Length: 320
Ligand code: RIB
Ligand code: CA
Image (cartoon, rainbow, N blue to C red; front, side, top):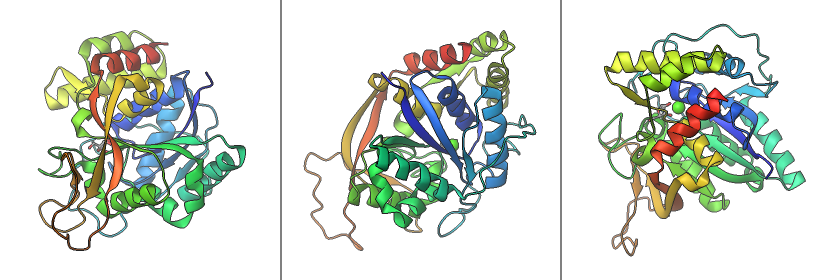
């Protein structure tokens, strides 16, 4: 089987870094391009972090572009800096990696238009706020035919993490998430929601960090340092590889169980702003007319994950 072509849209943070390492290293994944967006930290720091992580992972000359620096409408009240001042737990370092002169949506348009022309669609994996993806699909709807599947880390069928209702990536830019889902519906882009229902289950611990630290490989060293630092900071014995689960799902689709549900995003300014409403009712028909009624998008919502299998896949792949 040829490896799956993938473009990643990231806000490199610690778990985005784990996802990038896996995408570079796994033989079933061909990382074609990376685009950056503000989220865990400012977009220029995201670009710097991403360059450094790609260097550590030994990536070749992969096109990398800077995208949106702010959400489409409003910057969220401090969405929290969970990833340390530089977004990478203080481990970010200088990189000489070339950054594409084009803005992110131009790089995305170029790569996906080529995919349309060759008839080889690309899997787009977004592990960040969906600002770039929303702008792309609104400005260039014709590229949707070049997307094999959109897999986004975001949302939740249950509680949130940054608020009781909302998950961080969607909370950071709810309008972008709503526009992305609406465009996916209208342009028939198959979409997987890798949300909080599975996000926190794929865990690595200090013993995994010790195994990684035993290898002088830069990615293993960085991964081990990040695991240890997070465990110490959070006073826990294990941490989630988070975003990296989306790339595990590309490499091992059998490890993720999804179910198609109608999904909407709350873009109001109440307590539920940024909530993804996953409609699990037997007959998901609204019996009342909703204000500003927008049809939902049927999304493949991740419900179960082979947590141990994905954690092992991630560690084994980094260890080579
Ligand atoms: O809610 C988890 C998401 O927020 C992850 O993508 C993490 O990197 C942060 O961006
Ligand atoms: Ca992220």
